[in-house]
Length: 345
Image (cartoon, rainbow, N blue to C red):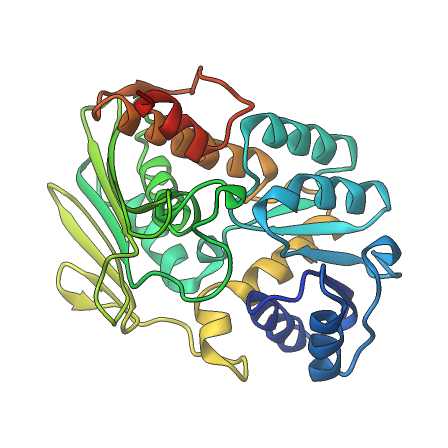
């Protein structure tokens, strides 16, 4: 069954969402942007209509919120109140106060909000999570996403709310949380982190953190904009009885005990849109709405990821000391503000 989709935002990521909609047989009926010219350009590319923000959801059943993080909470809540189902790009929002408001709004509107952790719907990630549930108690878990600093967008501005960890790092964090949860590790009880800045801005470009689990497992996550020209995204986990290794970039491959694992054939016209979960997450949201089910990647999951991020920035501000989870610090500050609050003076 096809659905109508509107794009709230017209940045480059909306091209992936639009391609996913096409692959699912959905129709993009409207595009809105802070800049009317950008909305007009994206709409022309998609053969649809550019509208003002105030006109959304413009009759669409699903709205994809792909505005800057500082706009996510207000945009998503307004779309829910207007009767649309909502897919919110990562990161969920900038502060835990905003996240609380989004969780409450989702509950009030039938859980019709999906947190856009697209990799949770990537077939290779889903296969790894499934296999991790069957290899026994984990003794090792690590993930990294390293690449160059983005040359577009406002990622390093104060308004964005955080740098490499806040924006890029939510991907490996989510995968680690999913793997550990599937393997029966529960939730981490604390996180310790160090951050490294860059030049010409006040945000972080490199993050190194360790999640501490009650079982004694230490999950290691690295997220960096100080990598080489080729992105490296990979995950590895092990137990006494098995080893799983996933590479997402520069190539896509999954191994179990050193043997390749066959992945489903790609059916979407643009392979990476399906392989990286954009097709699956949009399809899942439609199915969740039809079945009145809460998405696996709910607003609450997005808030869980954000609280780990906030705790990690706080840890970095106090020399890498572990910070307890759930996070008990200020909920009105962005991750970047939490980092600076502890390092001021």
